[in-house]
Length: 215
Image 1 (cartoon, rainbow, N blue to C red):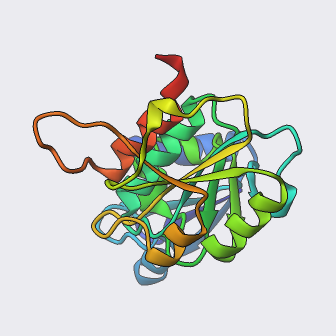
Image 2: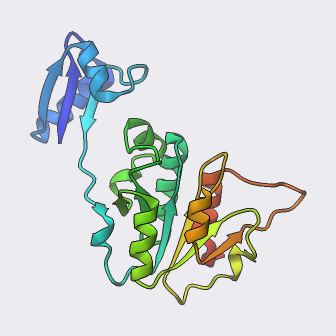
């Protein structure tokens, strides 16, 4: 863990508290020019001259997926950092065994994702793969049933039990699942909706999937 602080920043208020906490916990403090600090934080409008490197202990490769994991959520093309952060928070709070987050096509885990997740990035179990294709192929080798969420899905979400190994795949905020991804799924399923509503936000859909068998 390392704390980055902009040179010349006023060391009062919350900044003073942050520095005091860092010193008391023997956290390394590095000072930078404002431009360099903004480059590190990648969020110059909101970093307020302070950034912190964090270690996410539960961020792993998909090959590290334990054999006793049975219920997973996977993302294909979720590019909005706020949506990704909310999804991570829901997964962290749910009974799911983890989130499959391909590095290609999804928003990277950064400051905006961390903020939207309310810090749960360091609590959630996240498995990374190079692509969604690689993730699906790997999970099928592990005998996972692969379900893609789509408006035209043949079965409702609540018809899927928890007895089998299952992964639920959510697509892009606007376009939904890519056609290639749909073709790799064992089955397309949908979330029943009322009042002629066609779709809901991907983060809301992820939350329904994550807690589906508790209600």
